[in-house]
Length: 332
Image (cartoon, rainbow, N blue to C red; front, top):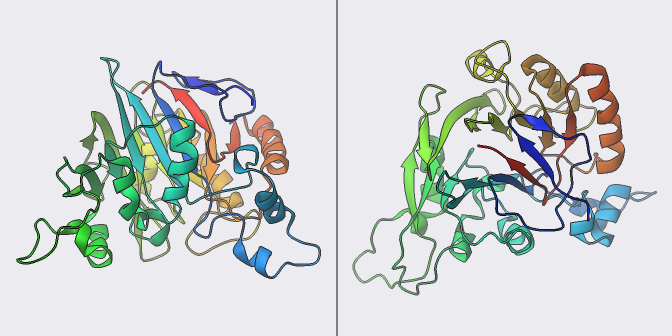
């Protein structure tokens, strides 16, 4: 496999981004656990009721091993491997969706991730939270749940929804006569949906980035990093002006890396950016580099990255599609 590409102090080499063929432990890194839409890729309908000719992306995604195939995409999720000043590593997870167990088996093992120290949730939709039950797989084993809970940061709206979806993960103690069952142990921490309300998780500072995910729904992105400023926005149809200021080169300062939603290649969508809107946002915010996530089967990784390479040359902002398993070294 090709070598990983470092991102240090905002600079990235011009080589193609790829999965590493070795594991480094000399600093912080971002690991893309998933870069696909809610339904993931391959699209099940393309396999159950194939078109004529068949969907090339979905056919390839099923027939080629995922580690060799950037068109195989799980739900969007990012793992931050944060190396603190004393050399200790903390592992922070953004979202645990429907495909979380698959991502653990595939990428935690490949990148030698031993546990999750903190969790951040962007919102409470299925592709962001339905893997929460499987968090126990990355916690110490205890049949009686006698372990320190993992802190999990989320909005009050998300908390209200998850309390209904997963009451057994939220309750503080058993009811009288209730039998002990092994479940994920989580310490729920409410954060505010406001750029002026930062918080700290596992020693790393985060700024919540409220964005619109449709006309009536607020989703959170996150800004983090001091040596390199990184913004992660997985589900967005509009960036409010207050959030835009925090992200913009002409506002609070240029981002070193923008990780941004793009659902479809050419058409529009009511609750997500698609490629035309994504590229307009990239031009407006003007980061040093951008990686795109949340793609459907409309995107062919290699072909569309060729297009983005040409776009990047014209606009002066390097932009590429990310891929599942991608690891980027970065100073945080």
